[in-house]
Length: 367
Ligand SMILES: C[S@@+](CC[C@H](N)C(=O)[O-])C[C@H]1O[C@@H](n2cnc3c(N)ncnc32)[C@H](O)[C@@H]1O
Picture 1 (cartoon, rainbow, N blue to C red):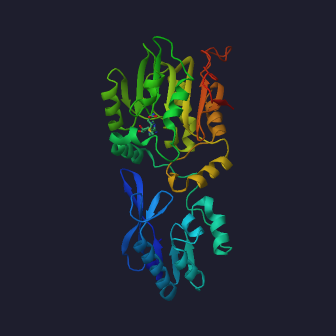
Picture 2 (picture 1 turned 30 degrees about the vertical axis):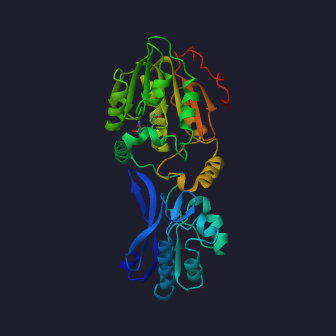
Picture 3 (picture 1 turned 60 degrees about the vertical axis):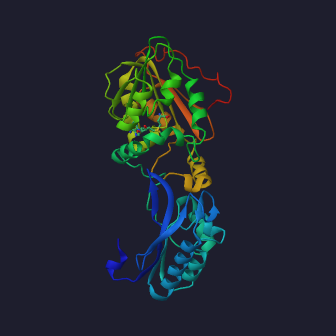
């Protein structure tokens, strides 16, 4: 809603994100009364370092000036993204302190994990309205495909960086040690990307298939692994035949689904697995909602609200619901878990696939 169109004088600041290749590289500050914008912070210096950003003194000064002016002129004052910097007395603090003393209607946007702290800091018992349902709203298939098409060339440099993917290379290696294809077996990797995980799982003689929605990720995979059978597609509609695979794996792709899609994704995995075949899903996951919220608070700006990092019990339940048996979760790093399971051979023999190599890797914690 544009409050100005409701006839209310609005002041204060919004903080639009600056995106490069789908990644947040900074924020700008917009004076809501004038529409003027300036840089607020950037991942690159110069500026005042705080967490992963460098803040522009001019940007902060103009934000505080906009807030101070709003105290004199506006009936509604907005401060967007009140957070860790304000909690230590920096950022928009002077402007917000002035606004708190005014009779105007105040609107602060705050990340869900910081709402209580910001309330205490501001000494207000204001109501909170959730604008986003935690743990975030996925981008959706079109935006996800566009994102990976844009970053395909740089993907392998970024995936081990800071944030929820930190340490993903080590996690790929630990997860790959959990599954050992036999000679001649057929492996499907969903969300294969550039092929980093499939290449670690595959043994000599493994026939590797890969599905991914991003044509550019597939092009890079094809260039690196010309022998792989690659198809454009996604978790919910795998363009491969029924019961064709001995092993289905996926790494760091499941979190692009929305939780309401988990059951359908596991039904598709069950469809394409042969009886006795096994799946392995590696991703950013959490044992509980409390763990997920703690990680979100600890990672701050590095958390991506457009991705839904699932809860381990939710993934296990979806797998069992789709008919999988021997479903087991293994923690492979602080934020990364693997869920494995088997497609039953038949009504009378629930299992019968090869045993998972669980426990062979030091540091893997069966749950
Ligand atoms: C972070 S990359 C991981 C790539 C690779 N598995 C790895 O570990 O290096 C995520 C991949 O998932 C793919 N992806 C996104 N949404 C997907 C979906 N709904 N179904 C299958 N793959 C998806 C992306 O295109 C991208 O290639």
